[in-house]
Length: 465
Ligand SMILES: Nc1nc2c(c(=O)[nH]1)N[C@H]1C(S)=C(S)[C@@H](COP(=O)(O)O)O[C@H]1N2
Ligand SMILES: [Mo]
View 1 (spheres, rainbow, N blue to C red):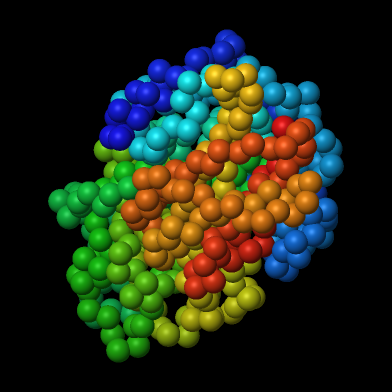
View 2: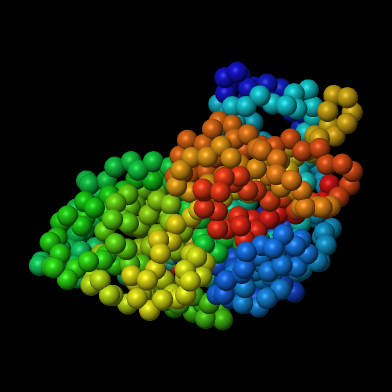
């Protein structure tokens, strides 16, 4: 069946129920009593490492965030065991389904196993939230936009600019009266300074890339992740404009990071910059356009770094300098701040001790739909995304760790994963046996594929059905 035909069939069969009072835009309120500081990266403030998940479903660090300094996705506002809030009840929310209806060619391209059924609504994820969702708020380092994943456009799998996550808002100390300058220098024979007029002619379409903040966590319902279409200039092209001295071995990329409002609880330190080897920057680019529009202020206007496959913290915004530095250059404050969240063993003193801050293969559910079938029975359709990693896989599996830790069930990714640059949609037809609170956790059932975050239980999500 073609994608379009399937999509039409899917839509014909979907009967929209309820007025669709959309939740998710700040609807959850603040449960207040969660662990950790008030600010942060959608993250609990600490910088230690949680151990691998023990399989214990109650209060291991990756889930419960009970250890003050554990590296968990739990952050402020997540009240442990607070149970469902009044808004957690299944309601008539068709949230996001209108978005599906707006496209014509379906992304899923898979036969709809619920043909003839009726979509009753979404089952919310519980024991998460607390952050203001789908709203731009805050200033400087603490400025955020958590995107509402239940409303992801499943046809395009791209976030419009207004719905792309934000971590750190436009610095108020940028002098907008002066033209932007980018200096390529450091340990070079002759540094070069470029204006945007020099950079723009060098740009080209770079395709769709997903970005995820390494602090993407439960407090913001995992909304610090988004995909956009980018245009920019390949970093190797810029590096080729200067001749490094023999001692120039690594490349520091630095962005403007001056905000007059300090980060709450000193959570974020000034000095956004990261040090790479030239090889690590082979596919990197300095972006000037996002979704065919000049780069918006909050996303790095006029120019920002994007290193495909690396965590967001490496994607320096408001780039001012590219500098060749020596092999034993000291790591930057940004590298140290994000050391644990990027799987480093310590906040190393030297840049060369840092491993690439890459995202292993990851997956999580984003929508749990409740359907009524033609025979009157109910079914649940779980929709989710898979992203990251270094090779394509068909070994996605789902695990329900309630009422007992369950076996792995293979999940068909449809259409098959075609790139690691951005996310892929998957869905799974679920028939829970009776009412229960279930933890949904994804796995890649292939020991050859590294899955550090899935191993930790980072993206476990809980629903009550
Ligand atoms: N100059 C500067 N660049 C920065 C940051 C920052 O605080 N200052 N934050 C980084 C982090 S932690 C992330 S996740 C991404 C977020 O990019 P976005 O806001 O465009 O989604 O920007 C990165 N670039
Ligand atoms: Mo981040």
